[in-house]
Length: 349
Image (tube, rainbow, N blue to C red; front, top):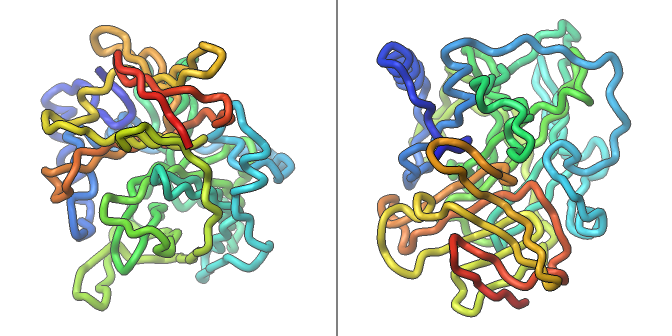
């Protein structure tokens, strides 16, 4: 089975070029392994490392701003966004250097499931039209699939020295798993609107402030603990997020919110993410909203998730857990249960 956290099937030459590129990237020390998945690099990133970033064709004028996470969320519950999205006063959550200015437009952070969304605005102060990141290009067979959300998105990453990687951090050098995407409909040659989906690692403590950073590729800095991390060119911090409502299974193994799903294994075994082939949210009227469902072989059937992260005993944690950021929102009052593979888990507040 294949998803956007998987490596594609490679020729020996392709494989060697990708691994050489990955090995040349600066490492970021962390307390635990950031990605315990054995397959943790996106198809888009692997392809882009080999073929290079695609040219950026921006629209002449940005569309009106006001919709929260319009790039990432579908079937959006506007009440959810209005009630729980933190939207800073314009001009207050900003950092800049001599080249760029980064503003946090809005954040929706759900600590119960451990997922979040952030909308950033990056301004090129020089006006030279040089975009400070590359765009990962998916392999052709994974582009524009009707039931696969991420197949229509343009992932941002630092593809060359001096370019920016966008990340979400906590504490001194704790990193969230994340994916950041360029909103090509809103962006212009010197203004970039970027939306990201992120999942804090298993050692994240509730209430810890989040730091939204742009790190410069190819440059390092030493933090007070002595650890070396990628150089932080831009950084803003935020606290006091609104708690998003959620439902849980009776045994506590399932937590569902309108933007996240957290599944914890009750029995040890192979990596949990490899055992999950189908996820559906069952409504009280009997209908089902399929979140993920794989076709036989390596085909992708349905994937309405933006990002997935797993952490377990092999990374130093007490349980085997997988977390998904959902691209489909829904009213929790209409939800009856979550179906994982063939097992239904009734949910309640």
